[in-house]
Length: 299
Image (cartoon, rainbow, N blue to C red; front, side, top):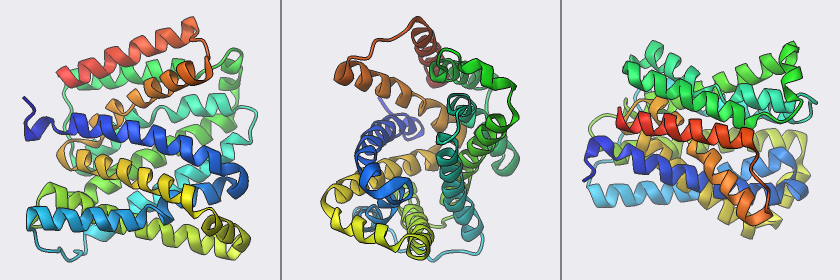
């Protein structure tokens, strides 16, 4: 039977599945909206749903509506802005010929999350969990590589972009967890929902102002495609809600390592929907991911 201490496991699995669905929806909007326009829909159209989730949390728990504390804002801004920077670096890498190598470095996010969590939040990880994180990370790096891609490891640019982007994603997880655990006097559900509302508000504000200044026509296209954008926004807010619930209960490194099952979901979609065969290298990576995640959950 699941206890409060282990609820982070199903929360993370639900979030990972929701993220795969959201990514698929966003991908279909990248053509008409561009990369930043498609990225903004997860914030712009996700924000109203986060408000609904928060209202439901308040109604069910009976918690009071918290007031933002001074310590809440630095953590929240770290989480929200780091995620935008990480996304920008990832989009930059997509235009580079060494994107495959950059992607492999991006998969070091779980390791960097463990390091930053220990430094900034004093999150404690057992030796077994550290081993599990390393095994799962090696597995996802192997899965991310493509034939011939290893040549790019000798290049400095993809190394820097990949590691910095992974670091920003890691800082984002730490920032959001730091904000959640500073919300006083409420349940973990309310704290997570509350942080999600402010996080999506900041991200919506930043990206909308950017698009208004640089590409106002994209904003018009976004509202013209409100139906598919609404569904993608809902899935984005839905996935984020469960990420934040998991962050409220355990170290961010645990969550981001278990989140590597997203790779398995994506592989399954590619195999069953597009009939893409799984290579021996990918199979080895999948085995390592499963082994690392299993060890993490059991530890």
